[in-house]
Length: 382
Image 1 (cartoon, rainbow, N blue to C red):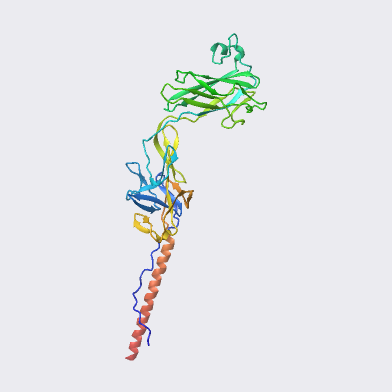
Image 2: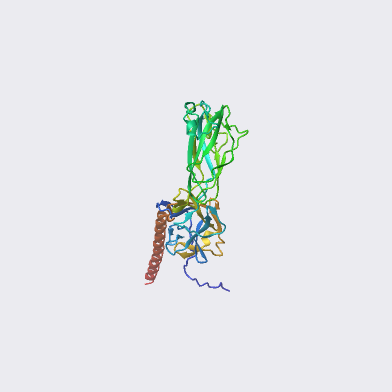
């Protein structure tokens, strides 16, 4: 017998591989341009269809959606309401013109020094000590024994109120405080909910914490807002530390330095950090998270099916997308204001092209040589 004769089908392409190696990062300065450093993909949606891409040249459309410029697919992620991230993945939308709610002041920090060398505040001929009484303040012996400090606070409607506190010395290593209601825009007065009277200091100039209770005041604004309850923290946020209120021999320079309330504001700008968190900058000076961009990873990225416009869809060979967030499980981080360039190495490609060309020439020479040998053989017969 003889072996079967196989009929060849000629040369054909064995496979076309998609290479997702990391490309160089080029800065553009456009905040919606995003570059991935790692193996992950952006997730974009058009209707119910989800696509995956590494092309991050996104834009904001007329409705505030973060979209791809080629086909309008919306970038996917989780949204934040009042700075709190919500469950689920959906369209990323940047609500320009959105108002953020006002926040009532809850804490005011005090820091600085009260002069330990000051004399005790003298009431003079008055029946009781009142550090707000102009007559008592005018007494010569009271110079340097009291201090006024103030700060702007906010109620739940964002209305400003000027909180004024007078500090005055009542004894050795002891200072007391009283709220001045002028400037608060209230009619019912100020209620002292809690607070040490007086505030005692240790021999090292720090607040004595053994009996200390942080001052707390409450008042009802005329604006119709909820009652405001404010804790005045004379420790600068760290009780017993010298970065708060202290008593050393020196100038009286204690101040109400910061508070945690703010008025209502509208969204003016946004930034995107390495974790894909979109933070909105509002006109009231606050920065609030608006959302976070979702990333996808695949067991076999080379198995993704190309759909055009630098987009891909899942296939049985790629496996299902594993969703996550940059620096939180996803295998990548995001660079804002930059784009990932092509990962093609031109030097290598030119080298490969020259090698292929020379290989084709060499094979052509083999055929030419074979033809010349056969021609010579035919000539020998003659």
